[in-house]
Length: 274
Image 1 (cartoon, helix red, strand yellow):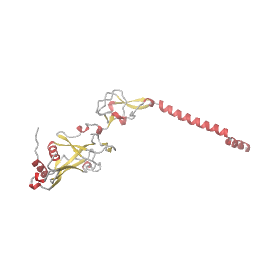
Image 2 (image 1 turned 60 degrees about the horizontal axis):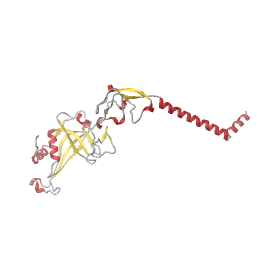
Image 3 (image 1 turned 180 degrees about the horizontal axis):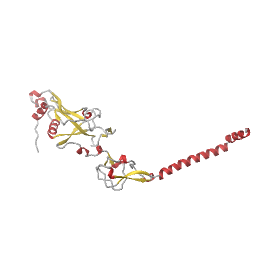
Image 4 (image 1 turned 90 degrees about the horizontal axis):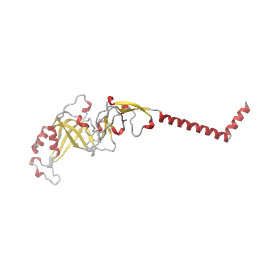
């Protein structure tokens, strides 16, 4: 027994034996890795495909989607491999998905990534209004689609851009008007300077800064905000202020909250109906 153990120890410390064992282990590892790689390349996986032609900007429903098995080695590009990545999404605005085609990440988008998605989201009789904003006026990008805001108006009647208070009524000299004009306004979109959405599913796109917020209001209020934003003799600014209304179950309609400011704006401006 002792001789057997001694012989085994000598074999272990022999360089040739160690080398042979090492080569055997390396070959075994290579074989296992290669075998797994081959299997992963040839074993088919289930992926979704379009059962019918899907026009640009169309919501993708379960009736439009089938599944098929494809070897991974045949998948090229950003192919979507899960039905959950496709159902209830939309085909991109510049994309038509042919019948029988696989789905690709660049061709399937969320609703809020569609350029014209907001036309579906406001009541009949309302019109869209585009308010200029920046990171500061959106409180560090905390205003996102679905938020409710109040809209305030700040007006200064002192000397502005070479114009003096003598251009205004005597009672208006060196005064500041500040008050809430509208309440219960729902934000439909937040866009950057190029018109791209700043948020996708309430997650900020890191390279995009807010330049405009878009909401819908009755035409009467649209006219009023337009008048207020184009005042030239006065330094005026519309200010969005977030509220917690989105936490409530029942939302109120957009409401005028300052008849005094409304009267003042209408007294110094006029509107030509088309």
